[in-house]
Image 1: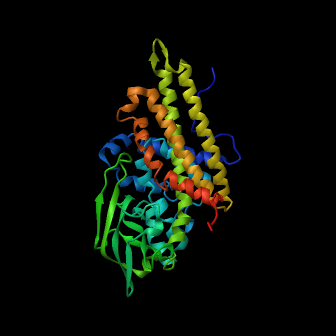
Image 2: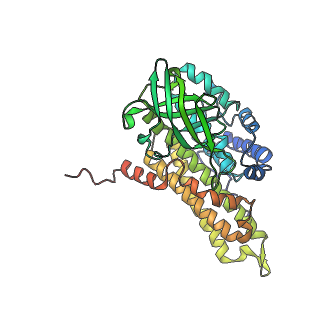
Image 3: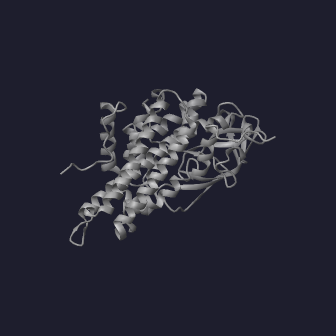
Length: 394
């Protein structure tokens, strides 16, 4: 009898060495000890403890990919793929989104802020002492970043910020926020980024209830006359848009890896159930239709894995393959959607009941197809990047 297929096993590959395999084992132990025993209760409670940040920080998980000068650990992109997929083994997108919200909040600070600001705000977050969030989306500006209306008016050595943000992951508990604001005129050239402390007077927050990602807090933020020192500006005034665009590649690659991890968990859970479930006197997996479901899930997972690994290698070589990353993120979310559907369908009633990992993943499919750029937006962006346009009309 052939051995049992492990979708999470790192294959023989030129991309993975002993350090990658050791890191995978380390993250897996952390997930098994600190997350999986509690994640169902955390999801029902709508939150996980702040102490988990410190535990992840102590292992260097929060600092992965960040410069050593800030307390991080510089690593190739394959370590990031491994981290995302191993965290996905816990079966909770909300846990992953909340615990790693700094992964999209800090990169603009690390890359573009002056040393004084970066050295003050980044290390405590990587240690798990503070929580960071990115605040870009608004009620009237989601994918259309250039339409942001939150205004930052210069007043001496401060900006005065008025406006609102919504759908902000870790928005309720964040100690600091990387906020996109309008400091100039209309369009992309009028945007800047500010670091706003969570305790600033004039900042209020409202929690949002969601279809999935229950244990990550998501909020609408309101800025009413919030005074922010000019020294908290990231880079030069009016340079916020390209900073955000540079940030999207890393975010989308991470989201794709996370979606792939959830697809793998669906495959693992489905195969295990099909072996154990007895239907009409024999294991469910003895039915050809079930084996074909598992084969189709594996096909899509392995295709997505190969796609992401190729892109991770290119990013590690210094490339910024925008179109391909957009398409890979879509490929991964569609793979997750297919595998989640087949998992729930195969488990039947058992897959529809809480708490079960495949039930939670099925509910969380849609946010993975929206967050970091909706599928439709990413298709159009990729098409334009690849030159699939009709040219200027005359």
